[in-house]
Length: 134
Image 1 (spheres, rainbow, N blue to C red):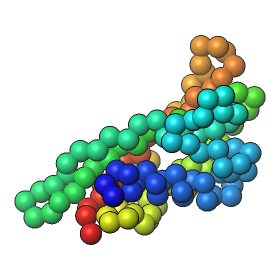
Image 2: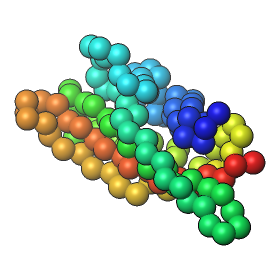
Image 3: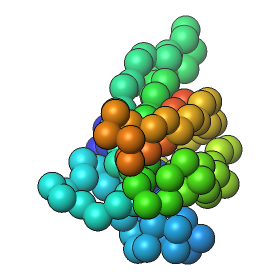
Image 4: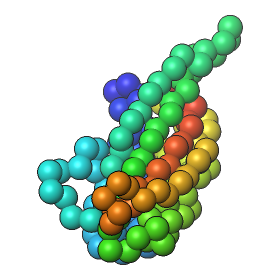
């Protein structure tokens, strides 16, 4: 399994396993691509980019993951509460990856913005991870 796929699997599993987060979402509403007409609020893994991070003596990859939080009735507050719960789960987490070691995982950025419809809020979380093959 590639490092990116292993990381994706571990990130989503960690979020789905967190009781405070799933309570805020009203269930395990964390998706790799949201189903059409998914109920709000929910979380989607929107992007996952990987770069070679090898040096002369070690192989490695640097990954940047973007999660989107979608909220309506709870507004900005709900989006920020969900982002905060996600940060507790993921920032500096020691996730087990298949075939790879997770060297570092950090939340780099979060934000919440009202969308053009005036009712929907989009939260954004950007993560940076470094992995090495086992």
